[in-house]
Amino acid sequence: MAQRSSSRVWLVTGCSSGFGSLLVPAIIARGDRVIATARRPSALAELDLHKNLTTMELDITSPQPVLDNIVRSIISKFGQIDVLVNNAGYVAPGVWEEISHEETTAQFNTNVFGALNLTRAVLPTMREQKSGTLVFMSSIAAWHGVGAGGPYSSSKFALEGAVECLEKETVHLGIETFLMVLGQFRTDILNAARKQNKKDNPIEDYERISEELRHRHQETSGKQPGDPELAVERILDVVRREGPLKNFPRLPLRIPLGSDAVQVMQAKCEETLGILKSLGDIARSTDYPDADDIPTYLR
Ligand SMILES: NC(=O)c1ccc[n+]([C@@H]2O[C@H](COP(=O)([O-])OP(=O)(O)OC[C@H]3O[C@@H](n4cnc5c(N)ncnc54)[C@H](OP(=O)(O)O)[C@@H]3O)[C@@H](O)[C@H]2O)c1
Image (cartoon, rainbow, N blue to C red; front, side, top):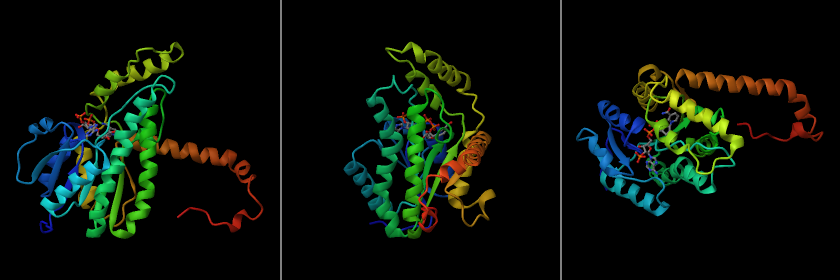
């Protein structure tokens, strides 16, 4: 097995476009090494060759033994994986009643189970190293659902729940975990989504809602407020504790990126506080008399 080196080794999924392809040169520019992966290796040919770049085919929906083997081959070559960026993902639009079980499962297989399974493959290495950083790409869609946005939103909600638990299971092992809660960033993500948002047998009752999201995607695609190159720099700052994050000894699990992320998260918190204010007494009215003696899960 290769010797461990002091420069970090990053494993990044979904490097054929968007955040993944931008992360690669940014990681190299800060002196780290990167294994850039994509399910279509030909798409990685556009990355500039560099001694600190290795490219590899990786479809995150592959079965667990395949993912385990890929990680094993990385470890035998590099001796370490310091940062895993679970970046690969896509937006499957569609209203609940129209979208099939298969389409929903495909969305979860990539956005949730792909990230879970690859992380499962990497965790033994990070436990052994007693160090490592896990980065997951979440979204404001995990904080605010919109009509016809269910498959994507539910996948990111699920991801956030799973990752929140993972962090509590692994923080004592020297493993840091971050959920990047991204607002809208100017990548091609909505282009691909637009192509999918056309059903063969649409239900008339939902046509307006589907059309609204289609229209929204059309209007926003290419004009999103967030600059992905700047977001990538912040992600590096978080992992490496550099730039504006240099003096943050302990960062939170959730890192909002984009002014719309701040807005959406704030609106959700305010809405939730409002619900607790108006319905808190009713909620508490269902307790047993000894409820105060029972420990809560809040930790
Ligand atoms: N851009 C935004 O506004 C935004 C906002 C919130 C969250 N995010 C999240 O950020 C991440 C990156 O998105 P992006 O904006 O950079 O979009 P993007 O340009 O469409 O990139 C998505 C990447 O994921 C890859 N991918 C999809 N399924 C895969 C699979 N099964 N195995 C391996 N790779 C796969 C795609 O590869 P192919 O080229 O082969 O399809 C592509 O490289 C996603 O998780 C997304 O949900 C983005």
